[in-house]
Image (cartoon, rainbow, N blue to C red; front, side, top):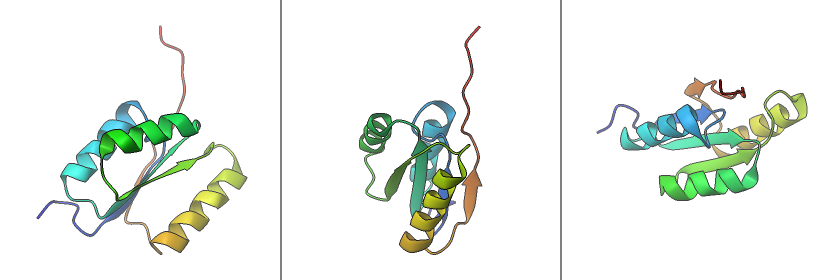
Length: 96
């Protein structure tokens, strides 16, 4: 049994970087299902493929926009009905 057996998670910014690494760890720890968000559908699709887990849902959107957050909420509510873990990771920045 993993530490996250039976848990439902959302990782914003989960298609790359720290968010993607967190999704990988959640899968290793036995997560029941994880939703990941990202602004680019192609990047989301690639992340899901790399994660290799059927219990991943990628949701394209910008979490700074209420309409995208409403869509995300509706998807999670419809597919799983609850959320146990929220990892707020989305962000952008310039590299120095």
